[in-house]
Length: 423
Image (cartoon, rainbow, N blue to C red; front, side, top):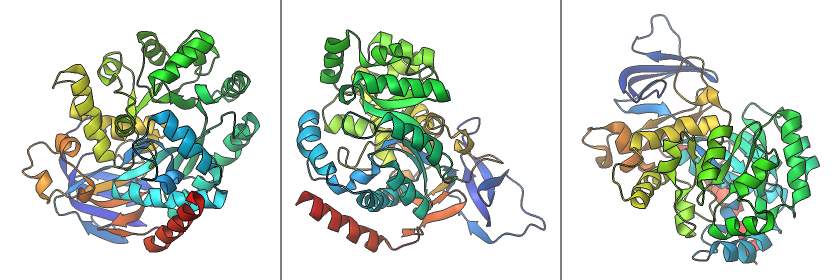
């Protein structure tokens, strides 16, 4: 399908944060044109008057657990370890693959309302989330969630081979839950797979002080140093959270080119701490942003995460100039794409994948139009998302979803699953 978006303000994010007026054309899965000219003799299946609003690349939610929607606001106001071991793990054990497929669709709808065009998901059954994403037309990168209780090195390798050939909307990366849930032999097996496939590895890393202290007690090293010593990060990858980092940890991330995926909403709600974003940026460490799951955040909203990323960093540094909003916007769009290995949808440019959003500037929170990119971070919200396109298909427009089924049906199934699991 060929679509023409005209009368646009365009934030391509290709080379700068400059906003230009013009048009964006899509042709099937790809962007066919970004610029000022009007079509001459061009035939389009649809032409959309953007009415002076902003068109830009979609946000990339670089750390999620989509199927955890069944636990949203079920177990709040608890410390992380109590929340995880007493509330989350016991109920997750009751989930079926079909449950996870249905529950993931609730999260996908929320991603679309927040202008998110891709998520980096980690959960118990990657096939279930992959199927949900493909059925909705949504783009998902999956990471293995192996630990001592679920998944195995053999399954990781099988998923790596099969899911990467499953559908153009799906990619799979090697991964494990965390050092503190995964024994040495399994960690060594993941490192061996990374070497075999020359592949990056992702995991939760240094989310809490307790996690780091226990790893030091076990191995005499922080999680980052310990995992790097196993050869885990020879081919890149990254860590989710990265809150309690030492100077050595940051040096390892810089040297290995690892991505630190910050999750400020979840980390604040669980009182895990504030990641040293300013120091990481100063060292040249690439940073992406994720919401974490709907059980720990509980909101899958990239606007809120962007605001928290910069504001909490300023609070930590006691410096209002720390972590500029433009840098944060780049984290939420370009860096997230690169962290997932999706350089083909990091900006609006000819030949890139047609993953884009339209932001309504005719809302009071965006007026006056003093500095649109910074205002996205400081004042933007879901109410400003008019349209979300993934892979050349409009999945959300003006409050309506186009994902193959009615939202009320998705919600009804999710509520039925939640009632059954929670007992």
